[in-house]
Length: 323
Ligand code: UD2
Ligand code: MN
Image 1 (cartoon, helix red, strand yellow):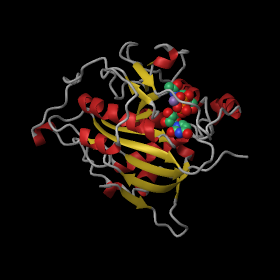
Image 2: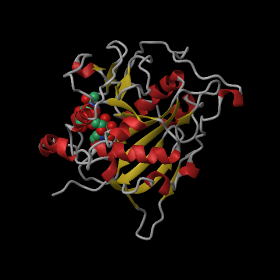
Image 3: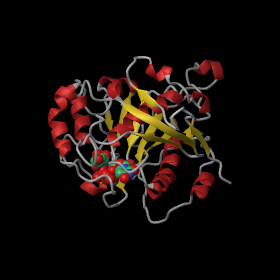
């Protein structure tokens, strides 16, 4: 049985609506989807519902994991395996008060196989880590050049409309941690969770590498004005983000190299996400443009919100690169 629900924005000019980031109250002002969420707040005091705070070290963690991508589950099998997940891809530990409310944001287009592997591994890991979490797959509509970082900004805005998240994890769809002690949580500084990737020999390729999976509190994200919207096609947007962090006076936290081991599903470069040489020009100017280009200038059209059992998919039109 197909249990998906689709919500279209019914606007006079079709299915879309332009969301502009102009006013400081914009998140509340555009709060059109909050009734879709079955997420509940964790602001109650422990005494009020007789629950204690969840421990800093979740007791069910097992450490190193064997991650293989040979066998793929169907979505129906994945749903059966993960019955504790609430509709829309939300989970809240039943027996303690979670330390953080975490939105996981995945930039996406045409990677259904990877998403199934990701859901298969991540839901059980995230459950053991005892955060409250919601999974948001942000899909770029159409065939224009892909823009990963802009989709991440969309994810921040859309997830914030649904729940009072305090931590945002921005993850590629093809990366899975090889150790569940790599907590998908926020810390004192923006956190780089994919710091020891298999494809780089389980070490950082360079000191400022900040790709794959990163975690920002709401405050940290706003402090760097989110991500740049101007990197179309593959490359350099992660270096821009690293620069935003350091230029804002923060440093990067990383787990220990053994704990931070992560695996990426091997793949070819996607059509519509070719290397873009112009991205170096954007990067070289970022020092001067970063305060104008980012969360504050984000514009996109919401096309569809689709609630699946294990994730919420949000499809958006983010436009195309300047010609
Ligand atoms: C590296 C970085 C990634 C990003 C990218 C440059 C790692 C582990 N990751 O990834 O964080 O900085 O370089 O842009 O080094 N995607 C789609 N559909 C597409 C294209 C991309 O869903 O058609 C999404 C998907 O979530 C994917 C991510 O964008 O995982 C990054 O794209 P990639 O996997 O092709 O790039 P990769 O592996 O070189
Ligand atoms: Mn990849």
